[in-house]
Length: 74
Image 1 (cartoon, rainbow, N blue to C red):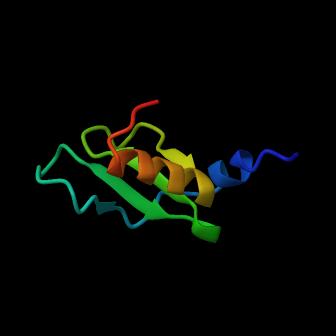
Image 2 (cartoon, rainbow, N blue to C red; image 1 turned 135 degrees about the vertical axis):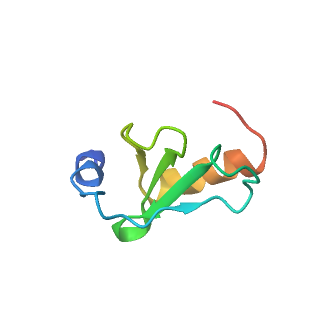
């Protein structure tokens, strides 16, 4: 099975349009998300925007989102 993550990390995010989580009430303490091709997402911490964002394929994003919505931790 091929690992799709190298493809996710090949995308240049220097001009990405980041958006805050709608669940975030704080100005600078929030999760920001940008879209990648094929339903993938990149996620970063707004306090540390220079740290490499986490990148998730579509199924990884769905699992991540469900974990957040249901309060699950790894």
